[in-house]
Image (cartoon, rainbow, N blue to C red; front, side, top):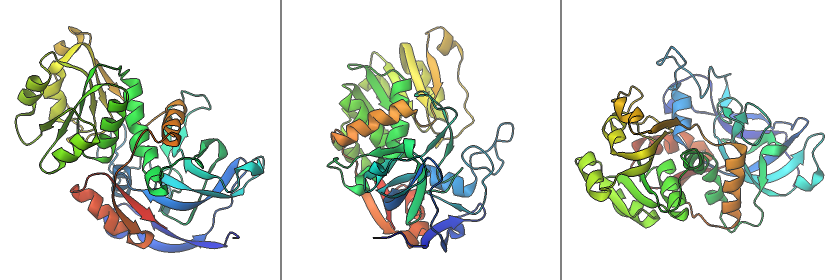
Length: 349
């Protein structure tokens, strides 16, 4: 099947609520030198989609300034960081062997070409993303998963949520046998953290609430703390010798309350601020116990390659909460924002 001249897309032209997501008929992007064109099979939603649309990331020195993932957005912008699909065209300097490969796209834009490069931009924020029928990507960021037994929907859930989770685990140096605390354990990144930490051989203690607690246990948590009750007391009861690593997407008061619960040399890794970005804690609990607070924004190329190996071997099984057609992207984002689901929400173009 040939590539058409135009495609359907959902894009934003200003920051705002779900209503700013608008359908558009736009030209199919042509892959530049070193790029490929991917026909999108599925694209998963993330909190980054909501915050980018809202402009909620702030800027250094201006925490409330409207901003995309790492700065002002070049509007109009097609959202969507997570893409699974097939390569249908290649740009100059790209081998034709890429054609018809089933792929997952690493959505990060890195600060260098090295294996440990830092992400400084994101597809769907700093370049157009997967809320469309086609998307371009650098060939070096496209990973062949043709042989993976995972479905396209499952593959699409991996880049941001599981990439962020694996980046946290690697930066936190989580070892088999250690006790790990996972906040927001029923969310996209949280559930990924539970699965990946359990697969690494850690003892997993999740934080969740209500009907979601059973789902977190099913994902692999050994014990689950109910965030609607005294979290600190429950953690101390479940891990009397303390926490080796906290993998935290909530921050806020949890950091204040939880940091003293780390064991000697413990690591508190933060990759989100659902509970608030303005955090305070007793710094004595940090230096007297040789603890570390570590920021983690997504993954490195090395982390993402490890994740794709796990996908090819089907060592992780992402949970799909719901699917929506592309033209219902706003409704899908509203569903994501309600946080009543467990697993990932996926769009089908």
